[in-house]
Image (cartoon, rainbow, N blue to C red):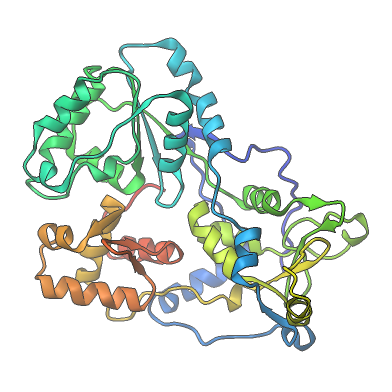
Length: 408
């Protein structure tokens, strides 16, 4: 089996903003890539039978990491460090005060955390945060929203450009006016965050001069290791180690020198490739892959103690045994229209979907629930969104169906 290269993560920054043309999608291990190419058609339309090759003596002892412990080992991202890096990336633009470049666009794939990072930055710098217009303001091109933003000119951010338009004949006038005004300097200096799908669409329908575009560099194998390790760290009682449950190989470089002779797993390289370097896609898969010895859980529960993971091993499910969402075999144009529309706007309510997708309301509802049953979309109280774990297969489905996709 191919052995992954040694890495430490010490030579790369965890958060890094680059020009969009410098964005790099992580590559898969050579062996994994070859197998995937041979099986791509089958993987798209058929869920493979579960294959469990974990050694018996390990498999019998393992249980999923309890939810409370999972939240401790992999908490929700904290964005202040990324906001500090964003501040460094914007420093030259801010100091230059070039009236010909009043606007910066931050474009990243869905689930990258870009909106949260920009919001954290704006609060730290005391820049005004613009709230998107309402649904009716967009449909009726209500210029009151635009005039309100103009009245506050200078030092503003818009964390979700994808929430200011609809892909509909009546849903594009306001965004065109807004972008034209902002890029001409009529609103002072501003920073806009936009999902890559929305930017791919808006770049086609808005002919104005394009502003400076930056993106958050992808989370490759090294950055994922650096990020995951930073969440657990080490204490004077020892460090948490991560090993693959079927062969014992280390998923991250071991901290103990005496253990460095043990092989390294290519799990993180595969995870980085599957997630396309998107942290918000990699995180839930990483959480679900974590296991720990059942007897240790039972012993600590009997003592009524929370689990202490210092100096313990968390076992990671082999990639081949992880069950991920797959597109069903009869998916077609209806699914493609709905999924692409949701991605163009990050998330949408059922009411808006039924107004802008050229399908009957019943067809839209039926298709959404089919996608929901296959874990390809998620539903909140008010909106529908693509499921992060299913995003890679959704993107591939749209690309293979000949639909416009983002460049990330």
